[in-house]
Picture 1 (spheres, each protein chain N blue to C red):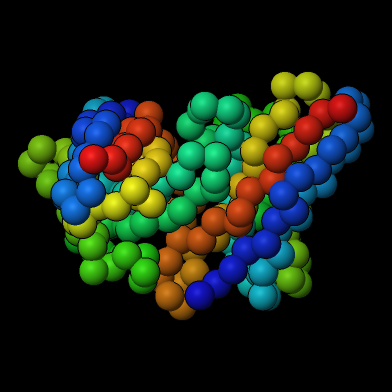
Picture 2 (picture 1 turned 180 degrees about the vertical axis):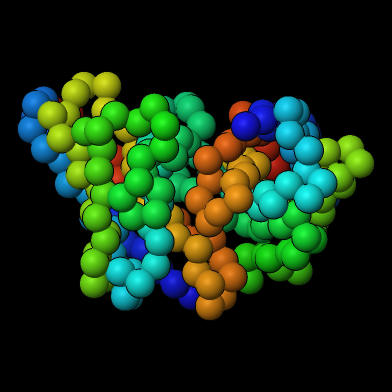
Length: 108
Length: 118
C-alpha cells in the first residue's frame, strides 16, 4: 500500500516560515491535498491539488510537489496556526485514500 | 455546497455492529457527482480513510477492513451509510463522513465519537 511520511512535529517562531514535508514514492505524480486540524475540531482542507487554495484560505498557505516530496509552506506564521497538518492523496492503483501520519506545528 | 450531518451511537459493545449515517442538506446526492468517504481518527492519533461510495454507486474499501465494512448511498433519503461489523476496542475513535467531487475532502460532517466498550 502507498505510504505518506510526515515529520511528527515542526516548531517555528512567530513571523517565520514553516515547511511541512510529505514523502511518498513518486508523489510528484499524484495530486496532494493538505488539511489543518485544530484541537477538537474537524479537519479543514487548506491546499488541494498540490498548490491550489480553497476559497477563504489565506495566501500564507502554499504547497508544492515534486519527485518524492510534497511540501506545505506557511509564511508569516501566527500563533493561531498551531494545529495538526495532514497530507493526503488518492492512490489510483489501490483505489484507496491515504493520509500521512500528521505533523504537529508548534509556534514558539 | 451543502452540509453534512452525522448520526449514530456514541457507544457500542465489542462484537456489535456500528451503523453511522451521513445526511446531506442543501445538495441532492442523485446524479451529484459526489464522492463520499468515511474517515476515522483514534483518540490522539491521525486520520485513517475507511471507505468511499460514488454517485454512480462505485464502492471502495480499506483493504484491511474490507470484510467488516459496507458503505452505501441512498439517494431517496440523501444519505450515506457506513456499517462496520464485529466492533472491537481498537475501533474507538471519531468517525467523519467527508465529500467532494474530486479526490480531496472539502466538506466534512461534524464527527461522531464512537467508544467500543462493554
